Amino acid sequence: MRSCFTCFAVAIFAGSSFSAVAQPVYPAKSVRVVIPYPPGGGNDIIGRIVADDLGRRLGQQMLVDNRPGGSTSIGAEIVARAPADGYTLLITSHTTYALLPNLRPKLNYDPIRDFEPVSLLAKQSFALAVHPSLPATTVKQVITLAKARPGQMTFSSAGAGTGTHFSGEQFKTLAGLDILHVPYKGGNTAVNAVLSGETTMTFGSLSALSPYVNAKKLRVIAVTSGKRSPLDTKIPTIAESGLPGYEMTPWYGLVTPKGAPQNVVDRLNAAVVTALQSKDMQERMGRVGYEPEGSTPQQLAEHIKAELARYAKLIKVIGFKEE
Image (cartoon, rainbow, N blue to C red):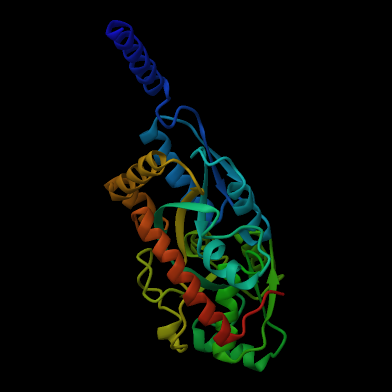
């Protein structure tokens, strides 16, 4: 009897061991990386840099999938509804996690309930840019012109409810201006609107604006962040240029659907944090105006909650509403 029991126990143990060994190590196939903006903008740049490095470190292809629209809500919903297996990732931002949840009561995803935080990725600066034909080189001059032309000046954004939209609303409210907002479906089209003369100014990522500035097709007036950008420390902040209290510091993070296995989240986090600490990644990000900001999943979760609360207060103070 003992002999049969022993054989049975050995068989069970062997079967369990085989199952454990047969289970593929993550990632066993390509990983989809959803970027909720069209190609070329700041979110797309950071997403592709991270995806490229992750692919090398994890030994699998990272399939970048641009899903613009809905001020990032379309891409976010796609990831929220994806299987919780770690094979679908979202390059998220302050827009997805702090602005939209405070603006849309019936948002098609929940920033806390539907996603598993992986790591904070980076912070950067937006910038106020105008067409070179506008007779203004400082924030004070832009404000003076806008006050002299009430209702005539316009600003373009990457979409209603996005960080670039909020940047403009803060600017017009704190300065007491009558400026019309013109939303587009992404940062590139918003910039093109200024280049073509459709709008007077725009708020966009400094990295995306730089090529046009270097070609003298746009003029950057100031950055939106609380401190000057490492991309060009000569450019002043809006706050120090005559609008104290103004700040908009975009941030980016990596998440996956809620319920992803802990070992998968840990594997992704370790790869991302290691990448962000590397000299190569810091140089690549620095060249396009980003400051690497690796974190633990819990730190990103706490950051999201803090940003939700911060933007709720700001939105209430300036009376910001989607159009």
